[in-house]
Image (cartoon, rainbow, N blue to C red):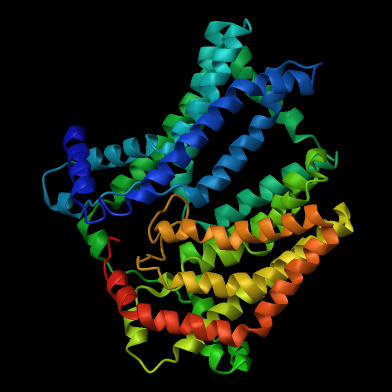
Length: 489
């Protein structure tokens, strides 16, 4: 039966209308995937030597064991957003003499082969090879690897249970933040508590039974849950849920734009993919800490320009690049109504403008790393407001692929085309090149002033630019409507 299921999934993949489309996108993503695997393998091979050099008075395995608790929490947190739930079209099987247990086992087995589980192998296997070369006991190393993969699968199955729960996400995020804060400020050492627990998985091979039992328990909890849900009447039963509504009356102060702005805010809040974009943008505010805290980047002003454009424009990029595909399910209906296209686009520009200003305000604390950092972020934010918003709206007229809003944004190529890669050139690379040119020719101040001037020119020419964008959307109107109707695009 497993072979039959796999055969049907294989045929479904190759016979789908989506197969063969966006070949360039798939090739590019394939290169990114290979690059990620190579980086993970290199990190796995090098982490032993990095830890031995960073903490010479401790065994690298002991040091690594202290941080494995954070690896577990972070992986579980990221999987909530990134990992898709294993799905297959089970309705046809519910009216056939196929055992429900076989279907449940197949779904769970397929989830075990998830790429997110394989990523761990590309990190831990090179590390284990290095450990063997360094003279560590082969049995201990092998069973430690088995323990790590059992933990990965336990995380996988736990994620399947909590993936739909925002409460679970909040609790997990709180545990992660509080644990790190306790360690960072020296109030309580979480590392020292869990370090011996994880190190025991190497020191005492018999403890491999603990993660294996945990994995099996999580598997059968999922198995029983799925088996109880595999009934045709459960699929047909009408869903009942309490609706939480808000009239967003404050949007009325924006006049005609308020109607469109209200629709966008409701869409963002009510759908998984758009809501995830908001959380992703907020999380990337902390992206600067990775670079600002490293001495090697202290005097790399082009890197600071990249961070300024990226952090203040993260929502602009993530949300803006798929305009108007967010409205693809009802775009044809909107275009058949007496709706002013200019107002529709201005409402998108207003929403993105607010996000740029808000993200800049969140980056103000980075002034701790110098006034130049704040000045660069301000110049990049102004450039995003005046130049990048019209640019990204213009490129949006080339979007012709439908987006389903209830799906996760991670690993989801729906709605993606070559346009999404090309748009990064004017939005991200061009402002960095402009700043770098004037920085190396003159100074940081001149580079910031040039970005500010270009942003102000864009704001002054806003009406002209929006007229151009609106006319472009009118030209592409029917092509976009036809593209959005293709559900498998």
